[in-house]
Image 1 (cartoon, rainbow over the protein chains, first blue to last red):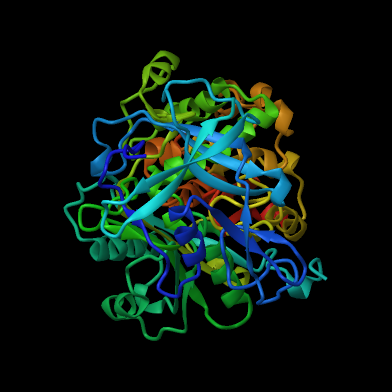
Image 2 (tube, each protein chain N blue to C red):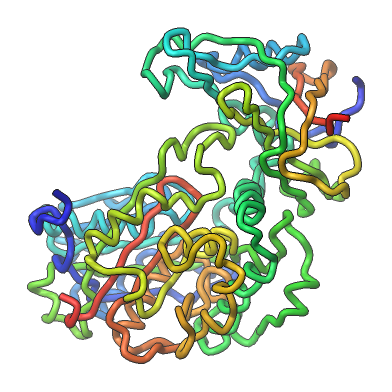
Length: 147
Length: 396
């Protein structure tokens, strides 16, 4: 898609210098969602870390998931916290939980009417928002109410 | 064993001096941040009747920018024996800094420790504005591109879940804001002195981020505050009635620092694991607390702190969180009696600790009768957090 939910000018996400989250950000560019899953004890883990918090293995590994989740919490910001957001609000941010993947959670914007009623527990589907013209290019994982 | 007297801070130290600068709106201090720190420390020494040269330890929190070696040199301290920084942002470390100071004194590392915090946001950046960087990495990369940057936004998400889980209404948040503003009207030091808040003004105020209105969010201020701590056996050598430390505990719940809002206990002030240690050390129950200073970064955190410190059950928030219950002198749990972070001054909660001491001394502008146990909850929802309990001599 060529349009973005929020105005251009917000910070562009990049992997850390040590590459901890590279798999995630590169996956999004290909419409894929990858998260960590321990190769030893099979525990799901998000965000990424160099160690599995359950068994302390360093063999954390990555798996591709079908990112259909449910809204765990949400908020509607009105006050602009960044110059790029001046005059833009309100907008919606949701915290999405994946019960099928160890209850890991991800943040994103809820697409559609920013004034819509949001239900905790509501099902959402992923939308890949590509910013191919940005420097560097990146993709955001956004959410839409599942119909 | 934690109740072993050899492994407890209960009754080992006392706060004998408190000091603060005038409190300013953010960016309005006529003094540099470092000078503000010195002014507060000297004021606390004067309050105690202590020569600043005799301080031998310095403790702070929240990555305070004022270096203890420079402070020590500026004050002409004879020696510096303890220089300590509690990790963690916001005001979460305020009570832990006192605990660290107490541990140093109890362990023989230091004799006279000043705990201080200084802020001059005209000189430095504000908290409630996202960083203007072209790219972002690490935990921020999962949040900033979605317009999630400020502390209010980070904590509105936790509060929304808590309110959903327990059927909490907006009125419960409003009562917390109203109590701080009402108490501030009696306190001439308060930045919001002379600026009362009523229900209609709260309801009409703009949203910062739902569920937080403007008045659910703390101020940002310039100023400094300081406390002088000594061992209990010297505490009566100073000018005022000592405020003895009964317990202090810092820390955070399981995986509180998990990235991208993945802490398992999400709708939480982060105190769940901290509080049992606190009460065990202090040897008291929540019902014995006479007056409470409960850090308001955002009202939602205050409410969750009340629950996690055992003052009310999560499903009782609507009944418990009322203006009447929080008002000194007669409320069920007088709270934020100086006006707190919302209406006295956002000095990262050290002004709350000073107010807890004033309540024990009988010097508050909203005094609660017969205070023996005076409690402070430091900044909630961050990690690590901390709390402390002060007591009169009668509690020892």
